[in-house]
Length: 243
Image (cartoon, rainbow, N blue to C red; front, side, top):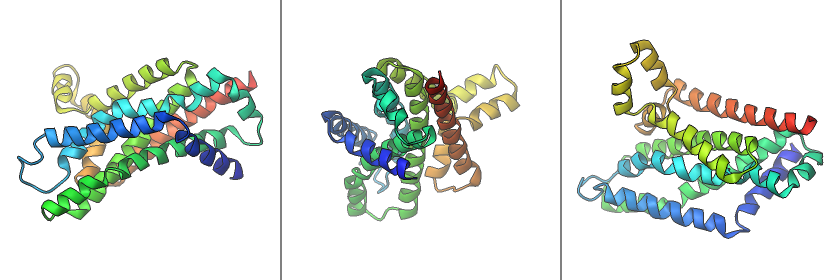
């Protein structure tokens, strides 16, 4: 586990050694606040963060792949991946170390939205449980998008290609569960297949947790999703090391 912790610490610190991390945080905080208050936050006359959580998936579709594209693509570009893979760490430790460092960075971005929590408590008496489950859903979704981004970063040596592929995959898995998509698919596909597509979508599981419905199927979905994409990333990197 020493290798895992060493990679995690190195990667997390590296986010703050360049301006990119601060640009990411500023962009995320700006748009999360802008979209929340633009969506009729005050007009609703209800002290909650439903508008913030409703816009979170759309923000994550673009911002999480932006944070993930450098994970392995940058290592390929600079050639430092050869040095990394010769260190006394396993591929699994390296992948998990990078993944959790990036996930911790994304969680930090979510934590920095705490002024909105203070705002709703100042304006009224919000449901604390819904705020907690909303942030839990956001953290899980960020991890899911990040796992996908990690895979495409390992697959491609170009950060831009990695970003585009990650955004596309994340958008497909997100919008597949949208009501308009479900209504359209219902006119083309059998009900069982439509239900299966909805089950594979981020949206339904995110909304379920966000609304305070804590079910095993929703948590297992994110666990299996993360595990599958991370395992695929590990296989790709392992194949490259042995080739």
